[in-house]
Amino acid sequence: MGAQSIPFLFIIDFAMESPIVYAANEIPQNVLFKTGLHKNYSELQHTKSKFHFTIFPPKPSEYREAFGKVMDNIKHGNTYLLNLTFPSGIVTNLNLAEIFYLSKARFKLLYRSDFVVFSPEIFIEIKDSKIFTYPMKGTIDADLPGAKEKLLANVKELAEHNTVVDLLRNDLSIISKNVRVEKFRYLEKINTGNGNILQSSSKICGDLPSNYKEKLGDIIFSLLPAGSISGAPKLKTLEIILETETYNRGYYSGVFGYFDGINLDSCVMIRFIENQNKRLIFKSGGGITMMSDPDSEYQELIKKIYVPVA
Image (cartoon, rainbow, N blue to C red; front, side, top):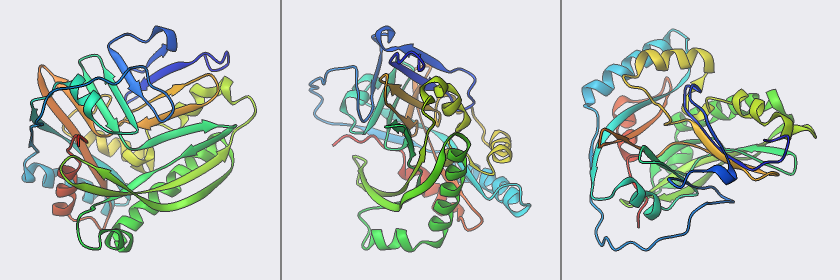
């Protein structure tokens, strides 16, 4: 499709075992999406006046046990950054379609009645024969006094951000040339519907070969899983994730995107709600380093459980 400039939507799970690809004119009616450049639906008016949202996060003891396993691996030099995630139960008066339409995010995906995504994190962009990625690492409650200064001065968050920037810079070097960090550690405010959070990102760019459209599959899969939701070194860290996490991520922390025949826009599927036998599960997590504190990381996991509905 890339070689023939045929527009398509792609959805790839974390383990890269069940990728989904639709030509643009064959996308089912119950698969809706929005990227920074494209969408395949019209906005709807909803009459629900109140939004109810209750979370049931993992037990602190359960989180501490997994955190301890990760720290043991860090101390033994097996990993130095690992994205540890957990499923949390949620109860809300909205169904997945209503969450899709009402949520405010740059990237949104409704996949049948299976899951919904409202992600702020870009995976890769391709435009004008250049590839861009924007690793997102570092979160703080935006309503705290001096939140911006506190986040930028946090040594642990800086180390984590440096690690993922270095990882993704190396990843881009696999498929592009002249890789450079064009913007380092800038902050964006995100409304969660229950307060605001600040998240830090960086912008990394590389130059693609002139025939890049013939190699879109190679480009995408050579960068997966995304460094921001796996860790470093990537292969060993993925082994530890599979040994430590107590559930199947599925499509959570995979990627989805749209190629319009010329440009490609895609995201990491964070901020993810899955329908499991009519029970809604919100999957979330955060990066663990040697300087991580289990209580702070547990609170960050909970802070990321939200629906961005004003």
